[in-house]
Length: 544
Ligand code: G1P
Ligand code: ZN
Image 1 (spheres, protein in one colour):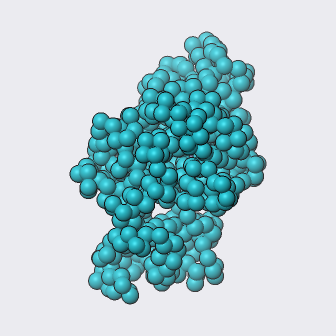
Image 2 (tube, helix red, strand yellow):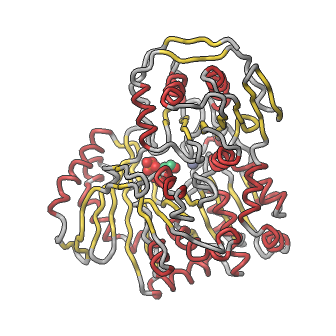
């Protein structure tokens, strides 16, 4: 195999965010841009000669050419085997599983998750380590530092690979395996959930369901598992065909973007269960007939009922949530007397806790839930978890949620996003917030007295690493919280996320609409951050 060393010049913007490097496709198409970042990753890793790399993406525009480039670079840099999903496709949780199952050295996942796709939209790449999870901060920092000094990258002279035919190709010492992207993952799901019970419940019509794949990666996975294996009708999976531009939509599973699903679930003759997943299959939105389950509640309900799922029946070691996720799961952990960890935003912070066996379930308010079965959040896993719960409890989604609130109380929750805010304004808001923090504790605003006001910092209990500046928190005496964070996944300007949360113990008040119940906190948030005043906007772009 002939290997060429190609001279390049560094780009100064290859600092990975919350989940890998995300940029506009046009940025990635600049000469050497993708190559520089991939070489920076390889240069920062050690001892992978002859080992296995897993490679796949969510199928968005630029996926295929990027895969061909990475194959040539992985070959030139000495990997012995590359495992690739057929068509260059792998959902993020499936990639995580395949890395683990085949003892790969690591994997490259090409995705910008829920961001839109197409020639003028977003692309992304992230590296996952041998445990199947996103590279920790010390690695992503090393990738970035290397990218600032890189002067060459390596490419092997090999033909483009046929990504569509399953089988193994041998080129000198390198073997390239094109695998079915669904089979291993489907087997894993079968080992976790009660597929016989699910078949009965779905086959008998007790559970009717609707899954919106949003023209993204989960279409083939949902068809195989929900339709072929569990007997759901073929029209139960909508927007099932993965498209390079996701049909022109944001493949973001929330009520705003999964419109068709939302209309059906809140319309007449709604199915018992409805769900959607995102571009790369790691997020989930859970709904039932006439009810939307917030991701924070979903995590808490899963934890409270995990004993009903075969894989978790024996033991729930502990749980974890990202800091802005509501405290609903904390109440379950306290009641079950198991530990609950609070981590910064981003799945990479759960990896050490999962590896050390400290937690079984974890989740984020951003439509992400998962368990120790892989090292990523997992959309279809969450869907199967809920289906299994409905089948076991023989209750509707609404009944399961209300029963949970009755027992634990309700953490009324919502998030307001202001997108594409000018960087200067966003930085000004953060500075303004910071300047108020020291004076806030003890001050009272209506029924809210500030208990603490700080910037979240996390010390990893396993490796002792410290991550600072992970969001501004204002906590009140009654347990309510307002949190402010700048997104680390956007590609245009800055996105300010405001997370609002208030606990309601009184069951007669559980049926309130979240926006009204949180109105006073929403006003307080504006008073603190002045986003409307400083941008002239009148409302958030997205409310979830
Ligand atoms: C967002 C979510 C975060 C999630 C990440 C990747 O990151 O808020 O919880 O882990 O996407 O899916 P953010 O844009 O807020 O940095
Ligand atoms: Zn995603």
